[in-house]
Length: 142
Image 1 (cartoon, rainbow, N blue to C red):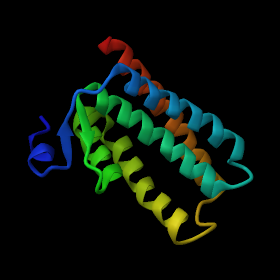
Image 2: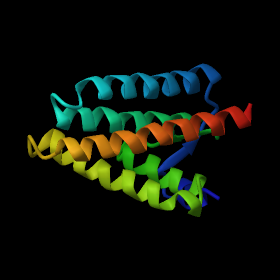
Image 3: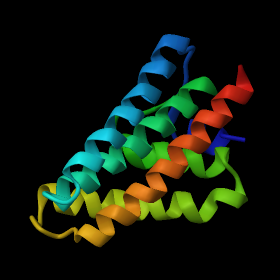
């Protein structure tokens, strides 16, 4: 299933503790809470923190499957994994988050004020749903 990602060394197999999985999921919840607080005042950072909630939830799921992204291009590799892991029914959502990965990068490193409050709130809503989806998926695995 993940053969190409393993072959190209974008991910690696690793035994990951339940504690580390839980920590990533808790970070996702914390990031959603933080994003909600700062969204109106600073859409760029609200967006970035909501994006991080998605990334942390994705990492929790990836860890639960026994994989870790390689450090180089870790965010990109995580979303490549999630596109496979969550299948066709979630393909559009993962593609959206990967686009937001690129936009977040621009907002953080290149163009201050790039993100509108509307964009930040849209990502936040999708991030909330995604974190819930991952939380449910992880409950099913236990």
